[in-house]
Structure formats: structure tokens, C-alpha cells
Image (cartoon, rainbow, N blue to C red; front, side, top):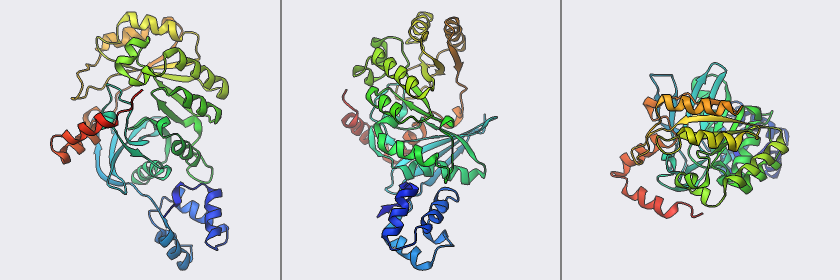
Length: 361
């Protein structure tokens, strides 16, 4: 079956012509899929019935189905738990800001990167998401709230660059002027730092924001938090970031999750300031979200402020991320993990699966 929503307009046109149909039908179908967000061919009312029947036999429209929607009483953040066509579960988050509606999407079912503070990686990687599934995370939310989605963050479950081809295809589809037409400047891709793929992404010349999960200012500390650091040093990572800036003109954001007693000391802030002072960048400080499977503690507010003040002395642009959806398990992977554990009982099988599937660097 052809995954019709993952086709760009040129590919869709070729496909429609291969069915013996006129090429203008492709634009009609593309609009139904990417502007009207239909869930099946019967909704495409301006297509002849025989074409709709032909499409039903030969193609499919992948749609994510809501399993659970949670709304934060603190800030209105919505967390969506979605079931995929094969029964797998993913999650997406809607965050409302004064500048518009932002959606954080998943790019994989689970994750194999093994970052120690992240709930997404606890069960390992199940499979990659295809472009149509990532698109539908956005489309379902826009249809649900009846308001335009203006910003997209690839920061949910999964490592986007570990699903490189599908993610790049998604980015091109979501920014297509014939579809939702979201500017690359309103899209942020977050990565743990797979150096060769950062360079490859730079060569795509997309005008998106690259966010690097740094979380430490030296390799030894970073290795304790992120297994990817066993493969790529901070020096190699920063070289790739400089390459990205040179290729795209887009400054890089560094995400730094503050873990009490691990990387939130003033001495660590000084090291980070010296590390980044000559790079055109922005630092986003993130008080770590505690998860029950790890013993990391969130930094206290005064230590977070002190860390920020030190970085500002190095003329580094820095902000503290506002916590969203804390009362509804807002951090990526938390809701999916608790839902799966509910179904599987004590989660033993998931833990065993994680031990097998976590990537070896």
C-alpha cells in the first residue's frame, strides 16, 4: 500500500498518473491531505468515485488516533497520547504562547540514545516514524483546537537525526507552500549531537533552528549523562555547530538540563561560559524533570539563576525554559511510559527490551 501522505507533490503527481489519472487530481488530493487534514479518501468529495475506490485499494492515509488527552490546570498545555496504525503509542504536546501555538512532536517510537535523564529512552527504540505520522501529529492537534499551529519543535520522543531521511522529508512537507506552509524559522530540531548528521543537515541549507542537547561543559561529565558522548567529543560537536552556522547563517541553541549536584555548580557555569563564548549561540537552561526511574534531582531556583548570571558575564544569550505541563507529565516520554507500564503490569518486559535496544557507541 502506498503511504500517500508521505509523498511530496511531485511524487504524488507521478503516482496519480501511474494510475491512469489526470495530473491535476494530485493537487486536489494534496490539498485534502495537507490543508483539510482528511482521514480517508471518502472525504475527498471532488474526486470521482472510481478514483476514490482505486485509491482505497492501492493506497492508505496514515492517521494517529487519540488514546488520551490531558490538559494542564497550570498553563493550559495539552498532552496527546496517540495510537499508530500498528498499535504503537507516541505522544505530542501543544503549548500555547503569546506568539502562537507550538507543537512538540515525536520522531520515533521510543529512543535508543540512552540519555540518563530522559523518560523516552527507558524502553529503547521500537521503530522509526514515517513522514505521514509526524505530519499527522501536527494535523490532528490543529484540527482538534481549531487554531493554526505556528511553531513546531522536534523535541518529543526520539532522536530526530537517528531517523534522518524521514525527518528531512517531514520538514520539507510541513514547510511546503501547498500544505501547512510553516516557515523553517518556526521549526526547531533538537538532537543529542550525532556529529556527521549535523553536518549533513547543514548541507540541506534549511532555515530551521538547531538545538543541541549539551548538558555538560566537559566530556567526562557529559559521558555520565549521555552515551553519545562516548562517540563524539564536545570539541567535535562544537566544530559541527560552527559548520552549521557557516552553512545556514542560523545560530545554534544549546540545551543545558540542570541536574542538582551534577552540572549546576557555579564552576560548571564558568567552564560552559569559556566553552561557548566565541560561538554565535543561545543557551536554554532547563531545570531537569525528575522521573521515578532515575535519581536525578532538579536544581533549586537560586542555583539556576546563579548559573544564568555567570553565563551572561560571558556575553552569552541565555534564558531559563519555562516549565510547561508539569502536572500532566509534560516531559517527553513520561506519559507514554506510564501508559505502557499500566498495560504491561510492572514494565519488566519493557526494561528488558530497553537493555537490548539501547545503542552501543
